[in-house]
Length: 156
Image 1 (tube, rainbow, N blue to C red):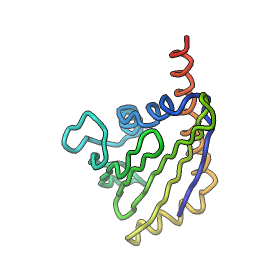
Image 2: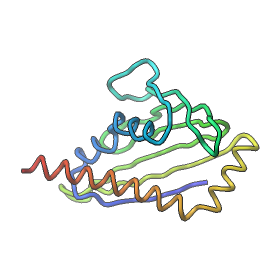
Image 3: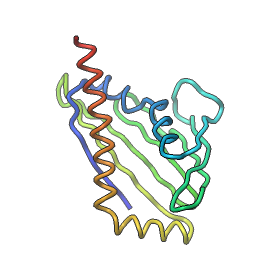
């Protein structure tokens, strides 16, 4: 099952890239939502192959989470592969520079299930597709607004 959203950000590609690939901020947001994540290998600089391990409460149960940066080609593309229970998610961000001061960010979330309980969860997501799309679009807009703020501060 694929979800695809995009947002035009009024900031250059390098500033947009740095905001969207701020993994410390992403970790903080996940922790704020109840996830317990830690970096595998205690890395400080993001690169392909680096990842996280932990757990998250999903549908009322605590489930194991493993995540890895599967592609990091800045400032064009970032891909993160995550396994939660029996479900695999591939989260891909692509950055297309429209002008010197505008970047289009496209996010694709591809979900697949390998267990029966994960297939049931996926069916539930299919029923709530509109709400999932709204949440993804909202996440993208928030990150885009932060990138625009960074750009305005850098210009001032």
